[in-house]
Length: 348
Image (cartoon, rainbow, N blue to C red; front, side, top):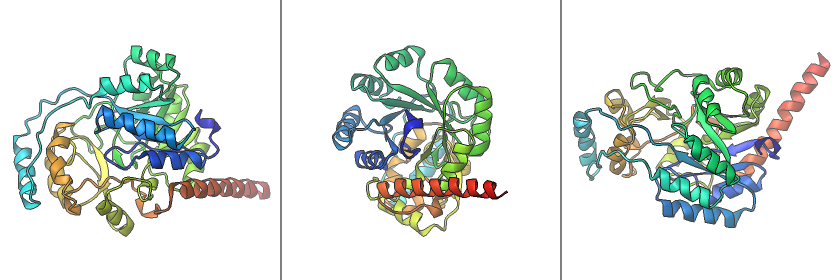
């Protein structure tokens, strides 16, 4: 499916608001492929988004599901107190640091019933039986991986494609298990290195993601063996995206550095550095989604210094254009890059 795209660009699933039916449809109509994010919304909201996307585009699209992990046994008492102090400053109260499975089973049943063309999984693996059910319903199965070992596991359960996430990616790391110690929850690989290592481990098509914004970036990962490039940060400034206004402004300023942190969700994720990340990052326990629920009211305040401003390392060169224009521009840049390289070697 992905190797036949007119423009080998995929709009990444971005939970928490940025991924909208309008964004998916705009990317699709421009020759790319879009994903809806199922994370953090109800089953009913997901159903509405799938139906709306189907109304806006006749082309296939995907839905991404968060695979639930094991319950954390970390003591959150101290971190609750830390978050409470921030909550008071922005006029709210800390959330309930509970564990839940994001209604995973019900969302899986929904994508099965609606026969969503592509279903992707992040934070882990679907059951083998569920993979077989999805395939019987006509769905292509994509699994997000960050290491060769995770890619091998994905191949073993019958994944059709792996989405290889490099360390430059914005938002949550897709690691199956957070080690609770290292900044990224496990070993970090740059996007190109991750592609090469995964391809040496499995015989599956690879989608590349992590720090990709331009047509030259897409050309690089295609040359490394990927069938398509998945971009998230590149689309955050689009009018079709549901990106928060404060985050849009911070992205447009382009002056903050990025860092990996567990401060906002209890799971490693890359975002723009602000006061909350600096002060609380070193103390955040590896407890997802407990910490996500705990900090949610604070993040919802709209105060830029306490928000989770997810973004990849190359965010300053992203543009705030309509999604279709971005896909078309990347396609043109990709062609220009390929032609320029071909001309260079012809001269050589």
